[in-house]
Image (cartoon, rainbow, N blue to C red; front, side, top):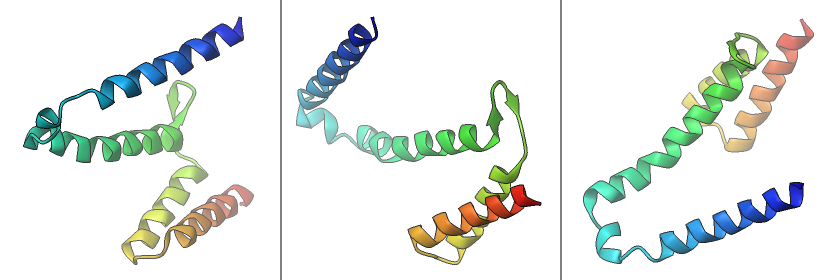
Length: 99
């Protein structure tokens, strides 16, 4: 039963990619489409970060993940590299959970 779902998801992903590749270039070059294509990944990633940081089941929570996100934001403000930001966020969240 699970294999049917896996195969259906794979077929759906392939068809979605095929549809995306068949869109004419004139449509993709429009300013509105270009702007949406630039901003959509940022919005989706922000939503994912928000849900994973502040969500616990169907409740909102403030815990060590929020503190780690804050530490990551501060590290980004000071233009730290990506790996440094990840290490700082993980270390901060781990320290808060330890307390």
